[in-house]
Length: 289
Length: 277
Image 1 (cartoon, each protein chain N blue to C red):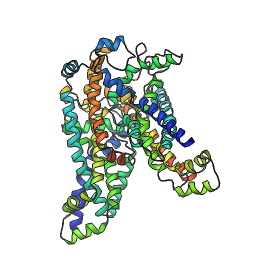
Image 2 (cartoon, helix red, strand yellow):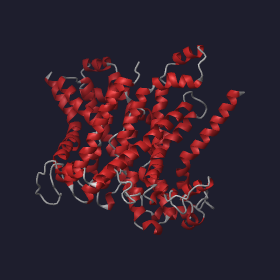
Image 3 (cartoon, rainbow over the protein chains, first blue to last red):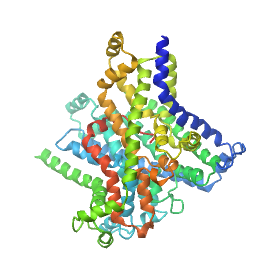
């Protein structure tokens, strides 16, 4: 038995040391720093209680970042889920070339966000960009896209849907392949139409997947950073500053470590609340076998 | 007849969708063959007027991406190997060396799974500074080692592995390391490939954390290097044909991996909730 304890320690420590150094201790210290006025440069700091949190809710920058983050999250998630699901339906039965099409739709997801953001910022160029060319074909536009505070967030959202829908799509293909064929066969006997089967069999059956995807996409979109840093740097006029961008700006640009970590804790709380909420909702409404 | 029509329509629709998804990549690839003048003067023409490989090579030398690429490959390869090692060992301990304490530790790991990594950046930065590992590629790798997704994926796969194999090896007098290396690894080789590929891509693509902790330009990863290249001349002094080429070069390795190893990659992705990058 003693030997097993030794093996446990030996096999766990190489993982547990970095876990403690870069996850557990930082989570605890981020929480502690959020109650101070530390400026990173000086070794001295004071405890300020809940001041950083109180200030935050009077700070228009923070409130706008909160609003931007949710606008971004809802703007990307609904189209991502709907598009991912509809595209996956096409692939419910395998056909010639289906693998190739899947790979193409998925490919933006694995490419470096920085590289593709650079190409998209050319596509969004108000004068020479392809996006306005497309709009003109439909008699619309021109739009200033990334250069106007009215459209910059929309442009980032469109880019993000393009980049991330492939992951949701692949996940749905996996879920759809697990719907038992017998369910469809039974309703075929009753002469049910495709849409009826879709609504009464497929959608309820994969609802756990849908909930999971909504939560994971939500958690990821709260952490959006790369494309914003490349395409707009939070601008114009703060219209694309999200919570994580604000955190970066406050901490590593302005060295306001107290307020920055208060933002971090708010991000954390939002994500924990969403995870708990999803557990609740899924237990009540989602269909499980 | 009707089925055939639907099938044709499906293919037409899928080709249109594919074009939409591929368009930015095509734009990037063809853009790197165009001269800068051509990009500005004929902005809506997809194909370059001539395929000038000499110009391409000249631009390739001017963009100086080699160092950044090398850094990314170093972090990607060494990081992936170490993450596979560390996380498979931990998952082995959780599954095959079960105890009350191991279960408790695993619950802690479980909790960190959904948490946003970015929240830890300020304290992680200070900890790295205290360890004298800031601005070092090895420090970056060290901070990435606790990959919770890898532990989950290994755990799920190890639990499906029959305990009989492990017991038989124990009777033969094999130690835990030998069992992991010669029994568990061969039986779960596709799980190792899946996690390895996904981890490599995550490390290769990583941007926010490296750009915080790596400050000297010769340490930059490819994404940081690209950004440096993108901002150095300002929007209008920019040589777009070189930007397109640089992006193409950066994207190429992951696209090659996707083409070659789609099977493993897709297996891993459909189980990942890929939260901490």
